[in-house]
Length: 51
Image 1 (cartoon, rainbow, N blue to C red):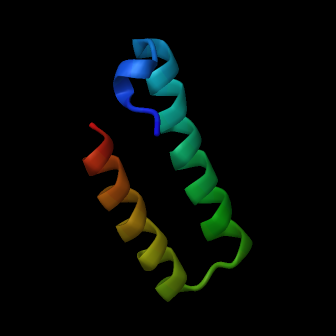
Image 2: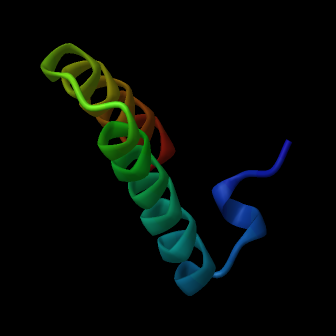
């Protein structure tokens, strides 16, 4: 499994942006309030573990 140490700072920022973008696409593709809340919760939980 890869870790943050395997990437440069700019590559790591790009990966974090990609995760955010994919989450926004998922929310937009099947929008309900419940699905949006669930996706935002999962996104923030995942991003907090990556940094």
